[in-house]
Length: 357
Image 1 (cartoon, rainbow, N blue to C red):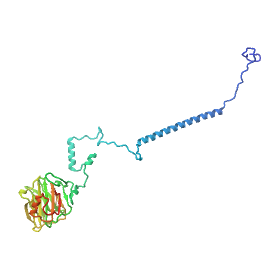
Image 2: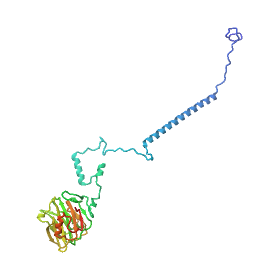
Image 3: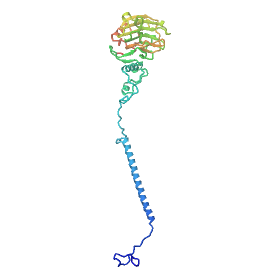
Image 4: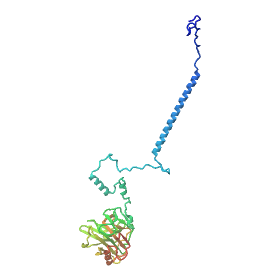
């Protein structure tokens, strides 16, 4: 140190004193620092907003893309095109449990037989079962196939082996019939009724053609069976009152006994002038019976059943064809001609005819 308090300079003790630089004691610029800090915060907040906005746009775009993909394509007209459905088989999916054991062969057969016999089985849910099922007719079927006739649900107009032309097929039950609804012939006057039939019932009374009201019939053409008696019959009621003692009958002979499985022409004639009824079997006279007249009723003509003491009975089992009714008494020669033509032509036009060949 020099005498005047200086520090020797680089030149040694020979230089003047070395002075230290002045010390600056000014305070930091806090306002400038605060402003810089605020600017930095604003930049961060802006970056956050931009990032959030970009994320939102991305999310919205993804949602829109998903909706478009799910909505399916559209055709050029703007109509939405739905994806094609995939057909599924009837019943449960393969290997899926049904909740019930599958019936064995005998159980399935019994169920089918019961359903067919009762007629109450519910239709299957499968398309094939629905398409093959017949529509309900309210207990009546084929009503348009016989002009002027309503048919019971158990009656069918079709063809039958061994016979040419249409037939009415019946099965001996209460819904096998045809009904004109109103009288076809005035039974107080002369008339003739004829039909070609095949009987399939071994026993029991069986009506082919009848006419009557709510309580009783006016005439009956068919098969009569009781005990050892099994014959074709044409019978009439001669008075009101529904009494058996006013019934008059013309029967077939032993040679003309009622048979099963064989086509037979039955013809019943009432001659109001002579007051007689006559039965023919296959054009051959069987019996003529004197009567007091025939009671006229307001009921319809029936095929396959009879009204007896307020009840339907004697349901036909087999086939009925070539049914004709005349409002006159046909002579024996006309009946023979009728038989020769298979029941179709008697040489004079019938008042009403059904099921002609």
